Amino acid sequence: MCTVRVGSRSLPLYPLVIVCLGVLNTILMLTAVVIGIYSLKKELMSHKELKLQLEQNKTASDGLQRQVEMLQLQRATVLADTAQIRESCGRCQHGWFLFKTSCYFHSKSLPTVTKNWPDSRADCVNRGADLIVIDNQEEQVEYVNNNKFVSEIIESIRHERNVWESGYWIGLTDTVTEATWIWINNVTEVEQRYWMDGEPNNHGHMGEDCGIAVYSATNPWKTRYDANCQQKQSHWLCEMKSS
Image 1 (cartoon, rainbow, N blue to C red):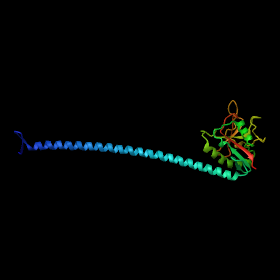
Image 2 (cartoon, rainbow, N blue to C red; image 1 turned 45 degrees about the vertical axis):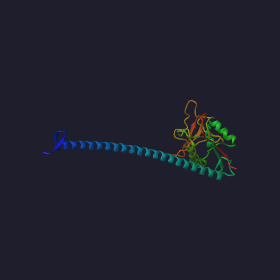
Image 3 (cartoon, rainbow, N blue to C red; image 1 turned 30 degrees about the horizontal axis):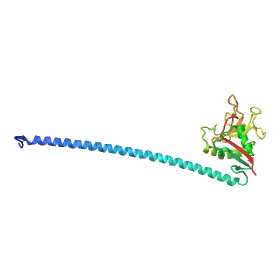
């Protein structure tokens, strides 16, 4: 048997070799474990950094998308306003737009102002006009076709949460005789089909005696409902004959 001399003693060689190999193997295993843990931690850090980068990229992308949508909306509004100015030039006052033979002023140019029905009408009268009147079937057809244009502008600038708040005052009221709706030019409204389902309903203890119009994508004929005349609205529409 091979031996190795350690000091004054002779020890078998093989057991010593086995012990050394075992110690070496343990060291190698510990080294591998340490390297593995380090690599795993590094991989996790890289994963977190990548995830964070993706989230930041998504946030930036969403922000750019919103900016693009806003720019598209602003472009559409500018084009519409440009068309109105070009078409209305010489026939309507500045800030008004021409449709058929009438000029219209929309309160969108007064974004922070709210008015009840009487004050909205007074604003129109002060401008030499009055609230819009739609008093015959032909004009209703024209109004329906134009309504989408007007209401899309309302939709683009409004901050209200529901359709009721986004409506605009029109020159229609039943303040003289309940349920007999009269336009401000003294023409009686006889067409029920222009009212939204369930309207007019004179809701509430104070009643609802003034007309409001909205844009309806599902049924452009049903565009009206009744509201309390003292209710404040951000929108109203003035009308006058063009020059």
